[in-house]
Length: 64
Figure 1 (tube, helix red, strand yellow):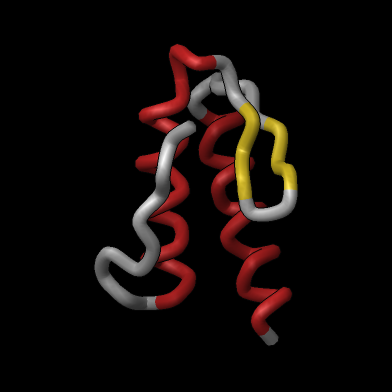
Figure 2: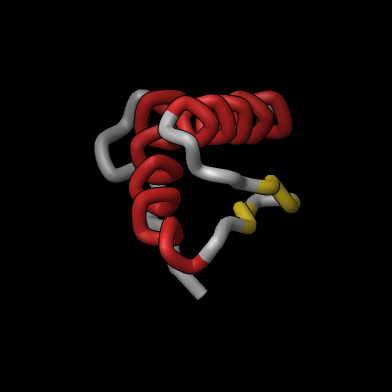
């Protein structure tokens, strides 16, 4: 069940990024994107996790 939730979050992130014209490559539980998009992708990741888990602030994302 956890792998399915992780997949749902990843798919949601990729679709939103593509919808905003942001190139992104999912790698395990991370996203590779150009540095100029890193903050927006982190926001999308946090929002997607919160929506899938139905919990506010479900998962803080660290940019590195």
